[in-house]
Figure 1 (tube, rainbow, N blue to C red):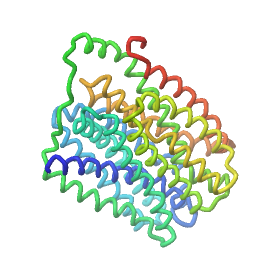
Figure 2: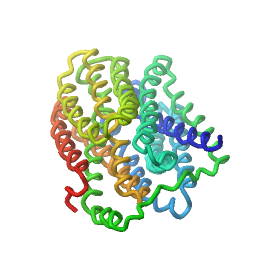
Figure 3: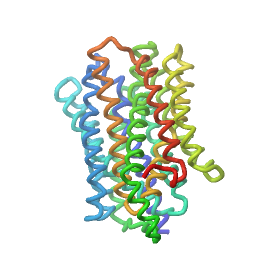
Length: 398
């Protein structure tokens, strides 16, 4: 019973972490509305810079700190940063009319989101794999399905709450739920099961020799994927409302379709991988990402926006959790380090797409549709890297 409750706690954390991560992008129409917070596109993009920096630091330092202080301590530290983030973002409503003060609240809030995400996600990834060591692909995909559920709920909830002038209720609710999870974590040891390490010295040697190539390929492919996913997610509402001239509600529904499809796709993949080798799914998904970029650059209506962003969500669905699973299996003796490095590379791609695109839009005449179309090239690169990474080990360059 105790083990079951620990598993539920870790998976519930994934759900709320998704909600926390997308709270600011989901509220982008509120933040850039000249009658509410009136942040410029550049100011909106800059909000994600400290988030990315702190997420990368957390992801890289978390594994080292966990070996010193334990997974549970770092996991709880991540929860603490998430609590701080939601408290600050909710409090911004109290200073809505004071532009600089409100911006500081969001800036500090996204900083805390980054630290919380960078510390929490790698830890719960390791917990999931330790709880289910022989079904790690399904376990991680299931965890990320709940993460995706949280990200899908955020834009839907914001769309509903904006109509009632109560968007701030979302971060406030997340703050309360995180408090409950943190208090519950105090009741459990949260040790999980140790991963089974290789006893074959030849296999261990091969794993270490491949680290210089295979490890960095995983880092690169997840960096590129992080960029692609963020172009879909963080700029969807602004693209659809400013370029396609949809209402904020219609754009919010399209973003919700994206995250909803991410969640449904992860659930579907967790079932499919029982019969189909995960490597085949890993190879097909980036092909779909490339097709999604081309389709989204040609959106003409609300319905095509919902369908195409939904397809993009399906394309993105399981690529990140499968990257974690494949990499942690290949380098199982350093699973925490691998998980942290992959998380850091994902956030680096996230940051490039968030801040970089904001700057491009601010200083050039390039439109988001053009950026969506040109990102197809990166998706093709991901296809090639995915094939290389999933070839039999002996065929890889060491």
